[in-house]
Image 1 (spheres, rainbow, N blue to C red):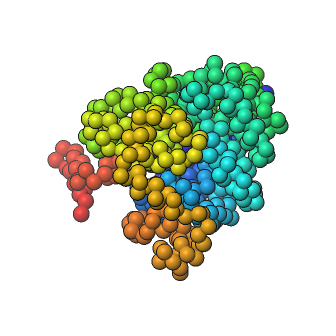
Image 2: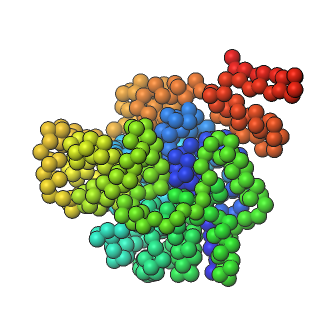
Image 3: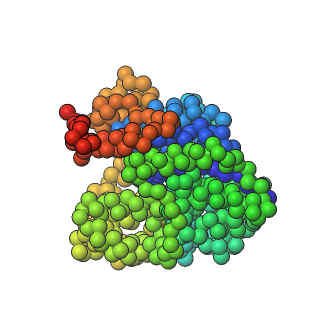
Amino acid sequence: MKVNFIDTTLRDGSQSLWGLRMTTGMMERIASPLDGAGFKAVEVPVGPLFFKKFIRDLKEDPWEMSRMVARTMPRTPKACMVNAFVHPFELRPPRAVIELFYKLAASMGALNRAQVNCNNMDQLARDFPWFIQFLKGLGMEIAVALTYHISPRHTDEYYAQLTRDVAAYQPDSIYIKDAGGLLTPERVATLVPAILKNAGAIPLELHSHCTTGMAPYFYLDAAKLGTRTLHTGLPPLANGPGQPGIFATAKNIRLMGGIAQIDDGQALRDASQALADIAVREGLPIGAPLEYDHAQFAHRIPGGVISNLRQQLKELGIQHRFEEVLQEVVQVQKELGYPIMITPYSQFVVTQAAINIATGQRYKLITDEIIRFSLGAFGKDSGYEHQDPGLKDQVLSLPRTREIAAELAQASDGEVSIRTLRARLDASALSDEEFLLRYIMKGDKELSLMRRAGPYRRFDERPQSSILALLNELTATRQTPYISVSNGSDYITLGKH
């Protein structure tokens, strides 16, 4: 039994544990050891949704990040979730923009493997007929994600049929994408054989989260059943709501008599320690095993969305009502018809639940995303046909619903040219890279703020003395106006100006 590994540290690890706060410099610090470890692929945040985070919150140029991962990891395929849209709720996005983005990412060597969802927004019917062939034409490896969920709709036979449909497009691999960490050993025992039986010669991978604490265990079950690639993270961006850790998983595969095809020796362990040092210095979480929480199987929220929810509730001053919001999420999912809890559904289910709790009246305010959902804008995969009739009637009777229905009827057919879009954004003279950033951010305002922030911060590979490390920690925050060091009657004071 030979098992390969895909590293998720830079993308899903950062998203699940750090809310995508891993900067370009942090990534650069560990990129070379990741490249030399023999991973089948390394996930990188090279996609429009992640670009927005880099620009808005990190104030870093995502194209610089893309060039960095291409430069520092030349031997390992770089992977990312790839979608046929730029904005998460864009229903008929301009195809020319999508093609331009991925052509640039592929040409600079920043993206070699496309991980494509197939069953949350009717992608098989809407996108696959053109999108898969386009990605193959760029020379990308194609890995199709079967997004896992637990509901009356998502049975083993559902996934068996889905596998047959996906296999017709001849991807390089198929993987179970368990974004909510909802798999169990019992379900793995039936689901993996059902998929393998219908996949033919296409190899199977598994991507899960440690949200319930069971993923490290059922990863081994999946490997014994024939899953040949496991998605893992590098501590401290492993465990918790992230993926199982590479070191423990590789060790367990070997203890089972298998061959773990990874060099998890000193170089990778040094990279893990460097990342842990960065986490301590920057006040970022350290991934650790979680206690079993059966509530995960009720609310089904992915780890990254949970961390963002906590932050949003804190900003609203209602962080103490977190458990109430989780209970409301359960009810909202049921009333909507059990949409799979990944982007975009997890975000707007959680948002609507938080609004219901914050206002004290369920559905007193209804988001535009719930209205679009109720109108069927996201397709049959969304589950809108199973929506609670009373809620649907309430949504469809809103004046805002009529406005959105009219907008949907007038939406672009996806054939708008790059020249037309450049003119709309006053970007006719810009490079393709700059035009795409302006399109992603819907203007130049946030790009100007990003540019004013200057080049990204690098993290020195040389070990620091304890005093130098302490000084760096103390001066990294604006809340430390001065530092005073004394020895008897001698003292020195350092202040910020």
